[in-house]
Image (cartoon, rainbow, N blue to C red; front, side, top):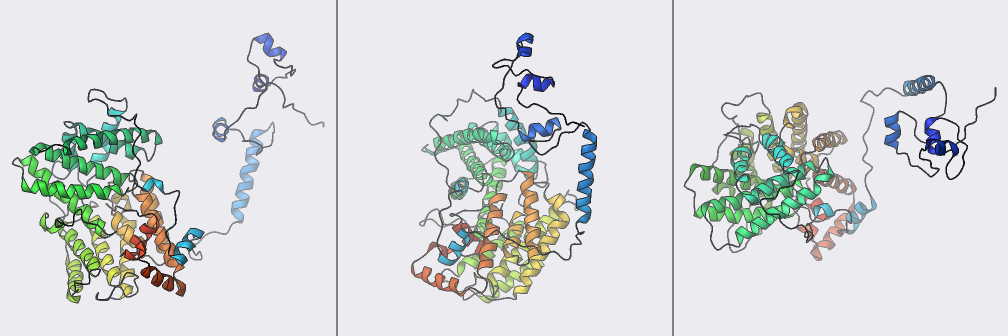
Length: 543
């Protein structure tokens, strides 16, 4: 039987209608007679288009009149191939991390800081273009209602563990201010657009525009000679929202600048306490926000005081020590103050004038072991509130053991040592708890990112690293948290550098030489801070 030959040089109209074309140029006779468009040019067919039409793409398929037979044969072939593969039992597989590059080796052996060309999203942003001028309050873009609705329905509702007037300051304190203040209005829309940008890049420009207008409004307020009570509250709310924006934008280092400015405004606010109940509720929320972000920042990197002439604002001076879990923070103020003491223990050894008492570390461990965090009243005890608070308590114990471990690279003289095996136990307990409760924990933005990050940086076994990556990827898949991706980058850098430093004597010699040259990498306190410096001076937020 003679095979049917098909011409592939006819015009596109005849080929689409599956009829013979006489191939007359520039217009075939059939198209000229029917007054139809005719063309012989090259036409690109995208892979998605072929999938939508249900046809094979390119040269992957073989033409046949019996399409169903072709599909049946291909499925049978796939089944045969799958049947030949051995069944995975989960006991004979070893995970391997083959993600080390030449840049990692350069950092490891030469103790140098490479020039990362692809890391610009995490650096200081460049000034906006001149055409991004502020729009008058009467003008609103078409997407503003969508952004405000997203901020109110999605962001506000998921920012705390409990969404009511007692426990959700974003909905019942910040949102009403945003409807009265132009600056806070643009800041709220900027945060909404920046969150939506994680799923749709079309929101990138609206996020920049609203962020630019919020900054301009803050500049106008700061340039005033004096401020009324409501203007101080407005500035604090603006700085809080701008700090939140930078954290959601891949933890840009400028969020620390906003946090320092927030500290100065809080100090001014304390000198002029508000008289109304609403103003007092705002002051309480502002204090909690500042203390929460400052304490967790001190566990990640060195926080420089905004001024050497003014003593820093201490968390214990603005927080009341309470064992009740704060639904906004996901832990109790008492635990937050203990974490601050652990961070103080870590940084105190950097000062030669401060002598560390070994009883302090053991007392901290005793206090953390005995801490019982209470669930707030009128909250279901089966909610994720207790699990998140417990994960943060385990993270505090893990950090304390990391500081005091004899095998930890950050250990310094004067700090009491403990058994490093206990540290591995806390890593396992954190991961086990998060695996059991992850469905509820990931429902809100109060996700225990901080203990997961610490467990990832301290994980030694490959199975634990796989679990950490799986949890991070699930968080990243929600597409509501902009600081997840840089956290993964830092954890993987810690792993690579730790794996390269095993039984390596050359690294010790390079470290000694770098100390003589005052390498900035030697000023780091934690292994993850060291990784952030190598990645370009990141300031990762774990809130």
